[in-house]
Length: 324
Image 1 (spheres, rainbow, N blue to C red):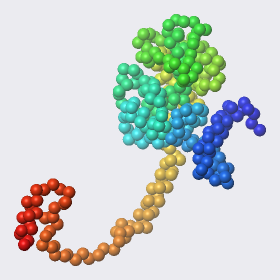
Image 2 (image 1 turned 90 degrees about the horizontal axis):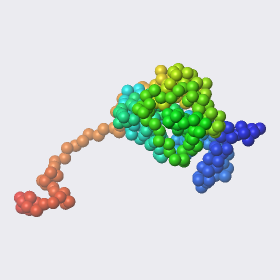
Image 3 (image 1 turned 30 degrees about the horizontal axis):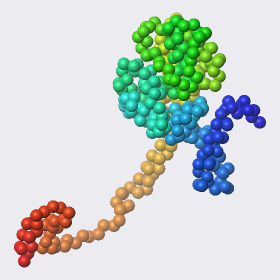
Image 4 (image 1 turned 180 degrees about the horizontal axis):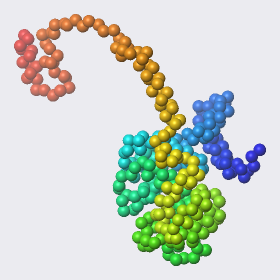
């Protein structure tokens, strides 16, 4: 038996509630004898990570598994952009995200783009890999990063770390982040003090996703001071954090998707087999028939006027008189 605490940790109740909601919405389409099959297919899709496709943003971001599933789906659907070497703008990436989640908020895409471009170059082009790994950090740890930005701002102003006030949810008044260029303080804040604040933050808020503190410690121990932009860049490039999320491959394997590639290879093999079985495409066409030329009538098609065309009638009258 799974205890209530374990069930809450695994978000089983959230999925049960969503499955019941989906069943009620489609009750006219589901036969009473197929209810067990409906739940089986639902939880199979949850296990495979396809349950978030075309769902509303509130559901996509409600559990860590949903967030990881969305990241993996985004990568698998659009990895050909990286394969082709295409560069896209922030608005174009937003369009791709909305193809999978119609109400995906623009602010998350903008924050991810700032990690790559900084505030003064938001209209520049980005590679798929640069945007993907920045977006992974911003999307998966969105609440934590909002709180970390508030902590950083408080430290910049010299306030005591014991009086730091941070937002607790996305519904709260949005915090205006310090620009990632940190133009007001190029040296940033002291790394040990920032780490202590983040550690207190994670201990206080047990329900929000946050990067593993040992990995944050590795990042903050690399320099005595750091800017918030530097902190975000380090998070997006940290291999350990990528593995802890478990959604995306390393950058070297970004173009490789073994499962999808195997499926594509099967399709190509089937098409090749069909072309060998039917080498001549003409065999699929109906047999040709000899066409006997028929003498055109006295009044040719080219001389006939369409009734919907405007005309003063002079041409037709001339033709009629010539025929008579």
